[in-house]
Image (cartoon, rainbow, N blue to C red; front, side, top):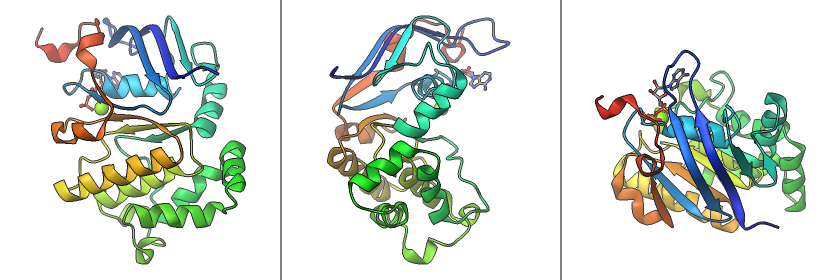
Length: 237
Ligand SMILES: Nc1ncnc2c1ncn2[C@@H]1O[C@H](COP(=O)(O)OP(=O)(O)OP(=O)(O)O)[C@@H](O)[C@H]1O
Ligand SMILES: [Mg+2]
């Protein structure tokens, strides 16, 4: 078994309609169990890179191994399956279903994946009980579990999205600015809990933030600009 969670080579991604690629990365690797902070200015391609790692989009050249799958060779459908089973993804806009309750949003992560169900079963816990444990850990009190997700505050929605991503212990957790709406104390708290969950469940973490004060929570900091040779428009050219 490889010690790598992610191994990308010659990654290239150009959004349809754009003349210039957004990403051109010779090498990107993250070890299993590593907790990595990915940094870079707005528009530099952080979310785009995360979407490749999660298989939402596909690299247009090179290879991208995530766990045992080469995402550059899988169909959209196979990548969707892969993500449901192995990747927790906290999106920049969290993507909760607004008419479902907070709890239903979390439980849903397991209903799409036999792999997540199997891992919950191995731990002898139901999806609902584990969802409640995660919500509680992330500071979402019982009184909010049945509230419609769309009526929660932005910071609360971010935490529900984190619980959903963690349910059923995916091997890789990808988090795109999940702390932007939290105050400093809540942010540190959230990071602490996320780290503890990742450690306990042996989850590799790739986390995007602008917030330099969070750096000490991570094993390694990657500046996207240091490895991305695509000419990105934010650079003022
Ligand atoms: N759906 C899309 N269609 C076309 N272009 C896109 C799309 N999403 C992003 N882009 C372009 O790709 C580039 C990188 O965007 P991306 O969202 O990855 O940046 P980011 O580093 O995550 O920025 P931020 O910190 O503001 O979230 C930008 O120039 C953006 O315009
Ligand atoms: Mg982004």
